[in-house]
Image (cartoon, rainbow, N blue to C red):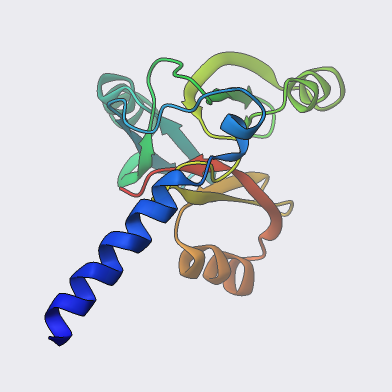
Length: 180
């Protein structure tokens, strides 16, 4: 009897949850939560203290071989092409301070170029601006002014560790991605 009741309750709840529209759907826009994703790879260069993120394994390998980066695994799953409900994750580079910077805001991108010496390296990936898809997780963004490094992670524990132990400051949630 308990098993039947549990199955019935789970069935009713999943039907009700599936019927709840996402924020975008409520505004007449659709969200694609099922398209294939690609890994957002993370590299780190200890000599210049820079975290680098890319969806291109060959690009990361070139950074490892030619620029001193070390592969640090996959940060999360993102979209290589734009799908419904996603926005560009812009990638910028500042040669003078050795920092890669990622943002979903075109205004913030333009300001970083105009005011802080960054150059645009195009679009790194496509991500969700909010947690509209079940299973998506925050991509946390931190900044360390003493070493001029932006750091991004989906791990709340890793984010807090960087803040508590390495002088990073919390800059909020950069975007939403799927877990690695």
